[in-house]
Image (cartoon, rainbow, N blue to C red; front, side, top):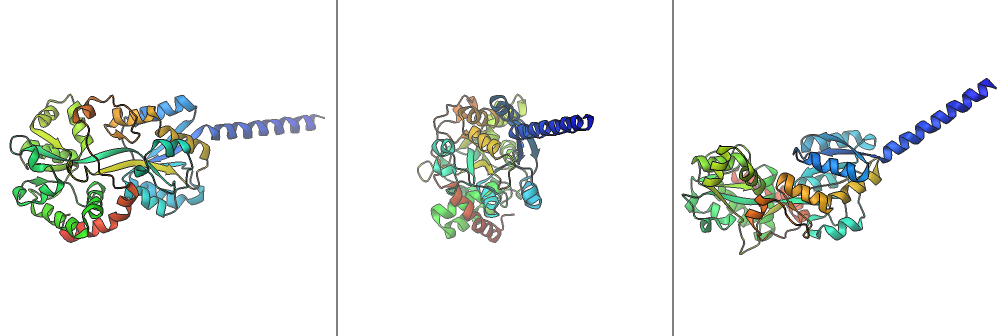
Length: 343
């Protein structure tokens, strides 16, 4: 009798353990993310508060996380992969890492421009590639187009980061779509001819260089400038006083934009949690976090901005090239960049 009682108790405990494990699994999301912004902490905390799902997060560089997911294969614990740049998302999708997500919430809230038509990934925020200029030396109308930066007026006056960086590679991909490969290559060669120094540093460094007089114009993502606008540091405030920005091509295709986004992984062990998380990223609350936390623009048009820096920048016309089209043109863009000698 004691043996039977002990065995029954062991079975009950085992069943209880399995039930608890299943319950825990339903309440967990394993996130691999190349987004490295501290402000995203509030984004994840709010998701847990709303759903009760705990977010286990692994951060890393895009290529490192991509290779890790590939190596782990079916045994990967990752449910969702977040990264920046449409091309990186498409590369992951082409490698078979993402599982299609059919969600009315995502399809109804996120414009088609920011989504993979097959449902493999979606963009949840976007950033614009702007032109920074020295207020004392350059008039904003002189840099109203990306094309202006490659003209003879700015020979020896331009700062920019590496041509191989995804921000610039995707910019050239947009030019390929809008203007053709020949014009895109002519522009890239003009950029190289006009450099005031060899490409180096990140986007913030380019803005600092303009403020310091090392160059008169530069290319940057808008949110780096927004951070300087919100900074309490006197040096950052001084940089904003000296440097202005322009959203280019407002009379043409509009300013080039790129996305930050992600998707559910094919071998996700917590698929229900993954879909809930991706739908949450399209919610008003999450969209507001993207804007308020990292000065990115929300992709959901109806979301109202409460960010004073973005409000100060004002509304602008965006280039409507679909993110997937940009992604597919980036290999051509890199070849053009290489031929132009943009290192």
